[in-house]
Length: 259
Image (cartoon, rainbow, N blue to C red; front, side, top):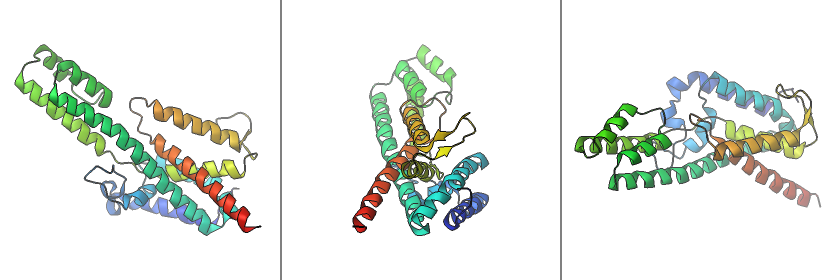
């Protein structure tokens, strides 16, 4: 499992090289994935985002998982099918992430529109706490509450709400995590009883249970996002979902071709 295979090696090299050069040749504001409604969105970002990373830790965690779990899958499928799986699931992960995020931002947009029609200090406070907690000037909110009819404060609060929405819709997503979580899912499906020895487990655990627990954690984290959590949990889940579908399709196709 630890002998690196050609396609895994190539993907590792590409990711490392791009990470080293990305600030100069691959700026995140062009190739990271933005929301469909953002003025920064470009279709090519659906693929390019999976070769960009936010830091050495982000890069290492993704590439280490690829290095550990990828080679066995490449030997099982061959390099061409493995690469197709990696790219298709990375694309699927980005589509699911953007779809879920679009739904969330639509709700934010509706709340912002309601505030524009009925601005009050309490509504302003609630909006900022829900969507921009810890990143706005609370002193202004206090002054606004003391002077709720002050037209200057009302205008400034509306501008702040518009700013928050624009900030949220223009937060990019980047990284190979969606494709990597797809690899984890495929590994659990194809080698369910293989025992893994993990750093944070004091005993071996079968691959199917590891994937099940990791998927449950991502599902919980996606629906119960904590303040400051900038992890794209639904991209991870999207990668796992598309991996499940693709593996089952290929298994059915291979079975039919053999008979």
